Image (cartoon, rainbow, N blue to C red; front, top):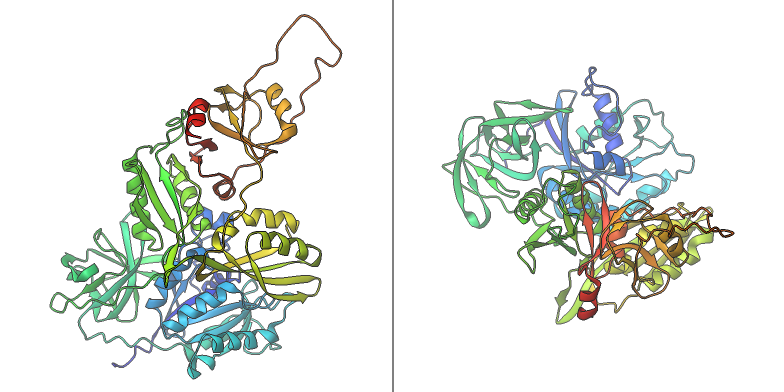
Length: 602
């Protein structure tokens, strides 16, 4: 092994969702002066997408670089949600150490186990940051022991078990080596990185090897390929060879070369071993490909990614309102967009559907698929989406389905309700722990049993509960699950809804639309209080006469309609229904719109 590069460090920041990774990076950017003075002061600077800022979670991994005491430290921000775990699996291959953040109140959570397991599999040594120690209910003194027990359970070696610890508050931008020590800035954290993160071992004199880890897009330079130079030097303008899947090679030239510097991308002439780089102007490189010296085309092992567990069918919008709101409507346009997503996001799997106008899209969970649907919707696409289905697998001749570990923390008064509701969804309780007026519960449940439960969970806990999930693996099929209790209120005639018609229906249905909304035959506009579907004319107008009667002119008072969201709609619809997605609307509909045709099929 060659001598390391002492002035470079590459570190991934990993944690459970909402444990403060992106906020801590804000503090590191300020501490090292990488936050440019001419830019407005903002929070979560690494979360560029609107969806990330709206939801408060990291969806795509991102990288930056800061300078500290003459050393360039590359930092990679990773998602904390289990549905986006494919991003974590990819980027761990281009760093030499990992910074494990654990909330000083919540402690080790399900996704903590997932990210630590992946880091240990890469041979990375974790460095622990106990974050949010400024909270009054913090229990930071217990966190190192919890992390140690987790590492022992996951089979860490002696070096990995001897991890350094720093106590920090990312929000305050301060850290200390001791829990009771004075916290003034983040220098203790940066000093820990320099002392314990190993320098890269790539030889800059050896033949070039650069592996593409993720893809991005820039409106000025086009497609970007992000990865790490494992050995040699990558130079702008030099001829290289791409080694793809199956060992296939192709010659190309590096036209533009960038490197992360703070919040900016800086154009470079060369990138040496151990550094992260961005290639532009090359459209043939895929995730996992290796860029090599033409004289030594040696490909690196491709990055293993856990397979998807949930799938939906996305099809061309065939409703009577198709084409009124969207810009991209055809199957070719939808296919091109899904292929681009599958190319960038390796945890998304795309296959042809049962018809030429439908496509089978598989992902890690309903949240990942919902984010994809919302992203396409904002880009101007129109399409229909089916109910999510789990992807079964046969293990040792036994039919199995994906199971998840579920961790919830709820008020004591709601614990019984949560246990009852999850037991109906085939979940089994594995751990229960009271915590000062709240109760922490851990379950193992089939993934399909958790579809749509989050909304119900927030209602049962009055918004005070928190729930986290992690894919556990495949276990024997748990059996049939109870579907929704109510049927659908289906439009029988096209037109505009009236308050007079809805007023007569709302006593026996929860409506999804209000008055004055255009509808078409076969559209689902509410949930029936009974189990059967009900065809209703919601466009019926009030008959006008010249005869007066007591109470005849009373105003129709309508109950506010239920707001339809993508996550809720995906789990509410049945197999004979679709979610119609347009840039301006979300509608529910029957697959077969005409009521007489539905009767024939049934």
